Structures are given as C-alpha cells and as structure tokens.
Amino acid sequence: MFAPSGNTGSTFWGFDEEGELVWYLHGDLPATGTKIARNLHDGRLLLLLSGEARTISFTGETLSSIELPPYHHDALLLENGHILLLSNETETINGTLLQGDAIIELDTQGNIVWEWSAFDHLDTGRFPGDLAARVLSNGALDWTHSNALHYIAEDDSILLSSRSQSWVVSIDHKSGEINWIMGRDSVVSKELSEKLFALDNGSWMASQHAAMKTGDGEILVYDNRNESELSGDIYNSRAVKFRLDTETMSAEQTWEFVAPKYTASLGDVDELIGGNILICAGGPGSASTGGDRNAHLIEVTSGDIPETAWEVEVVDTTIYRAERVSWAELLGRSSGNN
Image 1 (cartoon, helix red, strand yellow):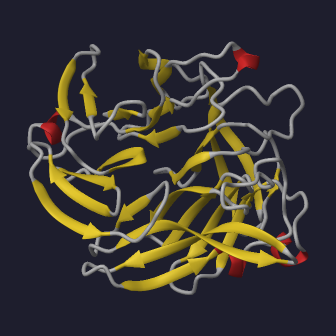
Image 2 (image 1 turned 60 degrees about the horizontal axis):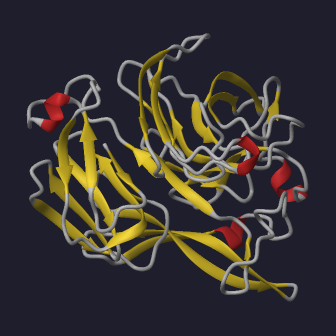
Image 3 (image 1 turned 180 degrees about the vertical axis):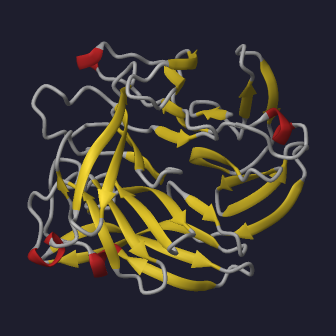
C-alpha cells in the first residue's frame, strides 16, 4: 500500500502479490506533502493529513479524528490514543538562525501533555555535512531535519531519526533525557560523546530515514547515504541493521541489502511478520547515477545473503513510504501473517 507523491488529492493504492490493483482510497482529503497511511494491524489505517490524524477502516469509514498543530514528516498513534508528532521550531544560536525539531504528544482531546526539543538536548554547534548547513526558505539552517519517530513500548522510549545529523537518537519518554545516540561521532560535544556507540564493523548510516527496532532487538534503518563517510560508497542506498550493546556502548552492523537505485531523499523500511524486510526505494535518483525516476518496492529475506522475495517497480513517480497489509486485515478478519 502506498501513495505516489506526484498525484493530486489523497489517493492510496493497494497492489497484490501479482502487481494487480486490489484496493484504493480516494477522496478530497487535505493531504500533506508526504502522503502517509499507517497500518495499525487491527483493521484500521492511520491517515496523516494536513492538520489532522484520522483513523479509518479499510472500507474508508472514518473512525476517529484528532486535530493536529503544524507538523512535518511523521506522527504516531500510541496505544492510549495519544499522538506523537514532529514539529519544527527555530532559535537563534550565536547569531545564526537554526531550525530544529520538537516532539509533541497530544492526548485524545488534542491537548499537549509532553514535549521534547532538540535545542535542549542536541549539539547546536554540530554541522556534520551540507544538509545541516542548508539554508531554508525562512533563512534558518536545516540543523536537524528529523523525518521519523518510532515508539518502543518495552522501555517507554522513542527513536528519533535526524537526517541532517545522520543520527538515530533514543529518548526516554518519561524524562526526555537521551538514552543513546547511534551514528558517527565526528564533531560532537563532550557532553554527548558518552551517549555514542563505537562501531566494531561495517559503516554507520548517513542521511537516513525510517529507523525502527526489530523483533530481535536490532535497529533497522533505510540508509540514503547522501553524506556517507566512506569514499566511493555515497551512491549506494541500502537497508541496514545494527546490533547495539548498551553496556559496553559498542555496535556492529549485522545485515544490509543495497537498493536497486540511489535515493537522494525519501525512503522507508519495515520488518514484516516472519522476519522479511520490506524496502521502499522511492526517492528521486540523481544525474550521477543515471537519474532513475522509478520507485522500487522490494521484499527481501533477512539471512546473511538476502534474497528478493517480491518486487514491483512503479514507473516515473516517487513514493515516500509503503505499508504491507495482510489479506486477513484487508478483508476484516483476524490479523494473519504479513
């Protein structure tokens, strides 16, 4: 299930194993620039619309709606009905206007019950690459440019993917303090250096999207690699897993699958029931890699040598994210294997 970024309105498509259209949602919905429908795995979809988070059935019936303040890129529905969302904020630091990210939690009535600010916890002097120093239309530098949230119920923590910092940050939901930071340790303040892992093998992600915790406790990421530290490896976008040891603060890369195209932006990855990985290499290519304008959705196995289990190529479009929906979920039965 996905929404081509170029279409007007809010049209989402669902294709089966053979690439046949079996479901669609279309309506005059106030869509955001990045159209997102999240499968809640209980017969509901969460639509992220302009100024609204709406849950619907697979028949399109509206089940609930929460008005949202200005947000960007991502929002999550928690088990208690609260919404976590990403929002922009700006501050002037040493004479320079920076745009950073806030995480806001809303209750079921739309009241703010928890907030977290990157300005309070991250290094405002860290600009690891051109993305962080990019000047936005408001004159601010795109200091953090976060693009994904992932909630982990087991320890009540939140994963924040910061594209401009090339970091995945684990945040304690109760205190707001940083548990750890996954990513390169270049140009980092002394205060944050103890939060970083030493990578024993492989390479850290760069300019990534869609960090999530897998069933075996590893961190899975869609790694765009715009600003990879490895010479000659910058144009190989990939899905990649890391195993973290929070006792020794060491990490290792355990798995990767190189996408069929380099994607300078966008991208998604999900672990499916059964362990396979769904990859959305849906962003635009670049002249340096042939300018591939097609979006690739690929399911691969998670063994040492990944094998492609299913693939579809969507011609001449971009796709931000894709979701797997089981037939049981689509037909309103008890959830089956994805």
